[in-house]
Length: 356
Image 1 (tube, one colour):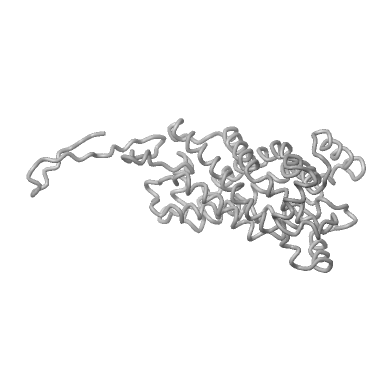
Image 2 (cartoon, helix red, strand yellow):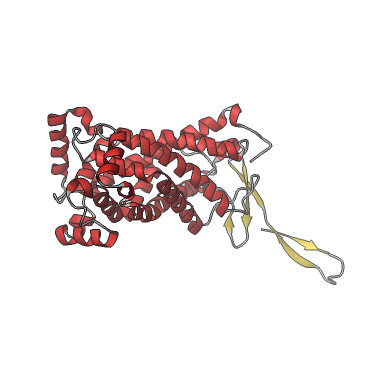
């Protein structure tokens, strides 16, 4: 830290003023802010930062929506068979085991065909494409709102607390916008093909047989679950990118490193929110499992599950399956999102150096 003399008239003496040195790493200038740590942006590494500077906010929203849609579709399609297996155990009182999960997959293929493992995936795509698109775009915009002192030439990272809040708000925003589609997808995943033939048929039958409010059954635990899940996932991923940024001198992480960061983020996020995931699945599928009178609220559903199956065997049933599929899905999602987003923003059609 350098010091210079300040001979400002009227002071009557020479004062010393600390001057903050600028440091350039990876093509980006950083300032060591006294008492506040180092100024940087964990989101934008060297190439990403240069590209992002040239994109106006309206195009940032569009590219985030597009990249998020692609990321959600790729990630969910990859783990769809595991997802269906997990939901089957979540909504039943059958104890979960790896052997049981394997037998479910084996029997499904034997009795219904290989591609029925992706049954309900059309409903999943109808939900996850807008969900992931809104979540990623909302996250970027929430970060802008929560970081008003940020500017384009000298980006500042969010402090840890606001980093978590931005992720949580992004999750809540996307859940609120797409929830009925999640309800429909859960129904298709746990019923035979003869019960529901299409996404539209699920919606019509639920409306006719159970009422329109049923489309929002389980909404509250889903929103509450999105707070720790999305908050923890985004917080963990961006914190790891931030640490890598400092360690590497501003270099972009490789695809493999992004997969690892995302996998750890998914592991932490799933573990933090899993009991509420159990509750929402029970409430969503109560109409086809004969439990409509029992699973009527978060506390009541949670109590019923614990009484019948115990805390670990009930509220954490299938968590080990989630520890496999969750990290895979989140790692693929984050990596695909950032790869597609970076590609889109590198196209001249989206670049406007006069706006940011």
